[in-house]
Length: 264
Image 1 (tube, rainbow, N blue to C red):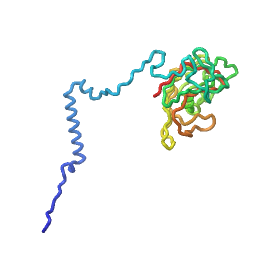
Image 2 (spheres, helix red, strand yellow):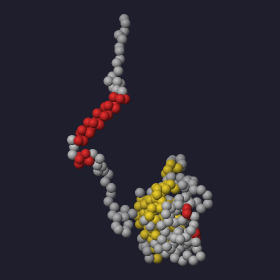
Image 3 (cartoon, rainbow, N blue to C red):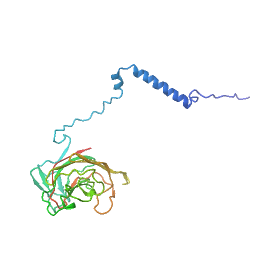
Image 4 (tube, rainbow, N blue to C red):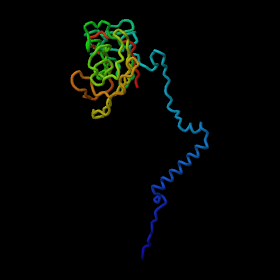
């Protein structure tokens, strides 16, 4: 017995060509446009309104500290800080300021941080007789104890530009020199994204930083190339997690005040 022969014809879907799909898209867009024309402007605007999530409320008093910030130093005590090797912070504390105790070493926060918004104010010594270059008011703010934003008296003081105030030390020259004279308070506002490492300890994404010096943009989302090195090239030599913020003792009586941080 002879088996019947079946003839398979293409379905309408398989017959749709690229041109036909384009035509369908045009029809759909036209229908949507017609639908929009039937709506009031406020109804059309509602289609692109996003209502969630609602940002949390943060109080931001003029000249004050944001309500969600962690206060690291407000002049009351040095309890948020410790010596390089642990123990009480050895720096001088008088009034609203704390000052480097020359030769005692730097201090670091007891708390560890990754991505942050950091605000601090600093002042270099008035007595600059016989001092110039890197010898005038030298200190530094180290993010995760590794990546330095330079503190230096760079007011009418020539030095290598990638080592002047507000430089990412030996990596990025500041866009401008916004330094005030020695003895005057200055401010840094630092916006920092920590590096990321994969499970094998390899670098996935570098750290980035933006810096305002006295309210002036001086580092615009620059890539940190690795650990701060005085000699040699920077390098991400090891994977790491969150770490303290570190203030350097570089044999100069630099003072700090009004330090707070927001975890991002």
